[in-house]
Amino acid sequence: MGPDQLAELVDRYAAALVLYARQWCATPEDVVQAAFLKLVRIGTPPDNLLPWLYRVVRNGAIDASRATRRRHRYEATAAASAPKWFSPSYDPTGIDARAAAASLADLPVETREIIVAHLWGGLTFEQIAQTVGSSAATCYRRYAAGLETLRQKLGAERPANVK
Amino acid sequence: MNTPTSNNPPNAPDPLAIALAKLDPVPHGFDWNALMFAAGRASKARALLFWRIVAGIGVVAACGFALAFFLRPPVVVERQHVIHVDRMVPDAVPPAPLPLPLREVKSRPPAPATGWSSDPPRLNTRNEMLTVGLGVLPDAGPKVAPPSRGER
Image (cartoon, rainbow over all chains, first blue to last red; front, side):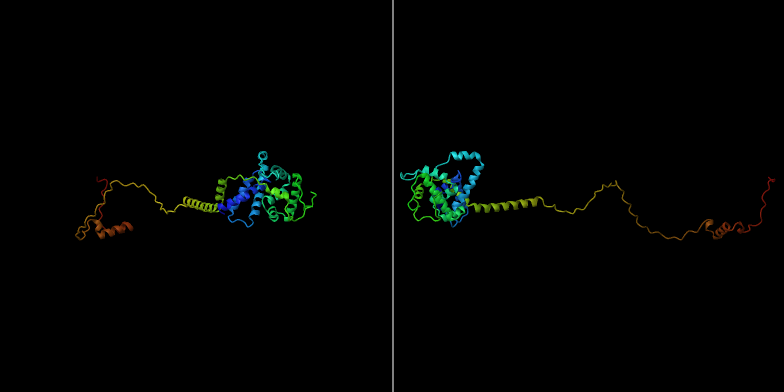
């Protein structure tokens, strides 16, 4: 993999991957960079590149989270300096980024990771199922339940086709 | 969650999902130079590992040769045990005298025996007298009377 390919991948997926890794750990940039370096190290990109990247980031983030938990002195610092999840929205009709992040943060991590991977990572439910080691139907059920919870918290209207 | 959910995504996307998806994640804070440097190093990791292995093998081989050189068994040299004994050299040994040249010796007939030992009759008488006794002595003529003591 050449530097141009790597730069393109980073430009395209890094932000969503960082957001995905942030669901578990306080150092998502390091985890995502490690995932890209692992991709470079293996030489030939895998067939399912995007699910592979998300799986590597997920495993790295979970490992980093465990390591952070072991080091208690870093935990308070990381929590205090937690960065924003989303850039401020310039659409006045859109959802407030801060409220959305807060609502997302309240979701269980099993649900949150599916929502983030689907909405911002662009993964299908089959790809998410490969990443998290579950079935696509289970992933969709969790996604829909999480979205409903967000709707309640954010005060959004329910779509007409949802009974 | 009391809301029933199906196992399949609906055809029409959820407006809340669309609105959420419009939120842009915070841009990553990667250090591009550091990332590219690390990526370049990672891409050459296999070649680096290969050359490290080659260098390691070379170092091990060199150490082996060095050990073999310094710990090789000594060359066995058969030595003859030579014992040096101090020997006193005699001072000024006179050379052996050269043999004199042979002189021609003129042979002469043996000289005639002189004295009684060379007289066979007398020698035989002597031997008989020593063996048998005085009786074997021949009669020496009239015996002379020994002088008497009164005649003196």
